[in-house]
Image (cartoon, rainbow, N blue to C red; front, side):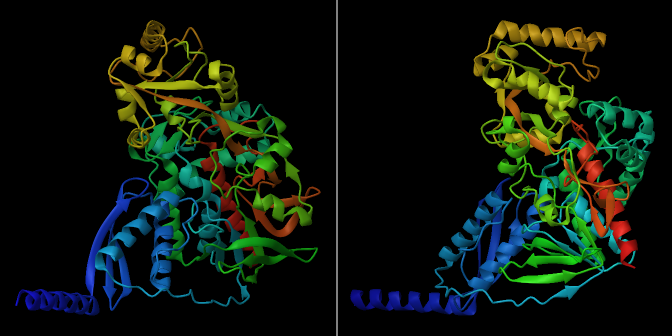
Length: 565
C-alpha cells in the first residue's frame, strides 16, 4: 500500500508539473546587474519562452536598447547563450543570469532554435548619419526636423557612444539658466577661456561658432527633454557655466535618453549593430555608404548627404601611439567603440586632418579599472593630495597641467579628497561610493591611516585649504574657485592618475561642418563631434565636449538636410 501511494503520488506530481508547464506559468527571478538587481518575469508555455518582462532594474537608460535586444534574442533562440551587448557587459550578464534562473526554476526543457536569416536590400534616403552618440543623434533630429528622411547607423547594439559616459556637464554662456540664477557671463569670456585652454592653437572661427550657439543649444536640448538646470564650474572656466542635471547628476545618460526618445518618436530610422564600412563617392559628391548588417551582409544606403559622427580614436591604442608615442601603455576612459572609424573611412577621399597629435589625458581616472572620476568633483571643492599628504597643484588648472603634475608625484598618481558636504553636493559621487571606489575615514586622521599617508601632514593640508576658503585666497596654488571648506566628516578619497581621454584631432571641417579636402568642401559630406579636429586646440576644457558635439551635430544635420533637397 505504501509502495502504491508513493508511486501514485510521484505519478500525480509529474502529471501536475507537465500540466502546469503545458498551460503556462510565470516565473520570477533576479540577478545582479551593473547598478543593482535585475528582476525579470519569464512566461513559459509548453516548454517554450513566450515573453520576458523586466520588473525591476537600476541600470543606466542607455542600456535599455541593449536589454531589449538580448530579450529578443533569447526568445528567438530559446536560449540564454546569446551575445552580450558591448558597453553594457555587466547589465547583459545580469539579465541573462536572471532569465536563466527563472528557466531552471520552471524545469522547462527548451528546444534551442537558430536565428532567422534576414536579407537586407539596398535602401535610399535623404540623409544618412554614421554614429549614434550625442553628435549623431543631434544631427539626425535636426535633419528630421527640417523634413528629411533620415537613417542613422550605429555599430554598437546601444546608442550613446562616449556620450553615455559624459559626467561633468555642458558649457554655455549667456543662457536662460544662468540668467535665472543671476550669473553674469558672456560669449566673449567663454571664447577667451576656450582659446586659453587650447593654448591658442584652436580654430577660432569654430570656437566662436560654438560659443555663439551655446545658449541656443541649451534651450534646444531642454526642449527635447534634457535636464540642464544645475550649474557648476570645470577647470579652466572663469564663470559657473557648466550645465548639468539637477543635483549634479551625470549629463551624458540624461541627454542621450532625451535625444534617443526624440529621434525614435520623430521617425528616424535607427539601425543598431550596423557597421559603416565605406563612403560611396563618385569623385565629385558623396552618394551614400556601404554598411555591414548584424548578420554580416553588406548593403548600400544611398543618400544625397552623409554626416560622419563616429567619435574619436581614444580606444585605438595603435592610432594613439602612432600620433603620440609617449602614450604607449596608457589606459583609456573611452568606450571600446572609439576606434577612429570615421578617420579611417575617409582616407580614400583624401580628407584634411588636423591636430592628430593633440591627445588629452584626464587627470582623475582610477588606475585599477580606468573609471573616470568627473571633474565636477574638483569643481565642487575636492582637492588633490600626494603620498606625503600635501597638495601639489591648482586642482582646477587645465587637464594637461594637472595630469603632468600627477605623473611627477610618487607612484605617478594622487588622491582626490573631499568631505561629506562635497559628497552630498554631487549625485555622481553616490555611484562611486556604491561601487566601492572610495576610501573612507570618520576623521582626517583615520582617512590618512587607511591610505597609509602621514596624518599630521594631511591634517595641516586640510587646515590650510580651509583657511584659504575662509579668506578667499589660495596662497599656495592660486585656485580661484573655493566653493566650500572640507570640514564635515566622514572624509573620502580615491586614487587617481592620468589616462587617455579625448582626441582633439580629426577630420578638418569649416563652420558649416562641411568636410574639407585640400581646403575645399566635399559635396554632401559633413562631420561633427570628436571625429573632427581644430575646435579644442592643444587641450580641451571639461564641459566643452558636450557643447561641441551638440552644437555642431545640429548644424551638420540641418546643412545635410538642406543639401539633400
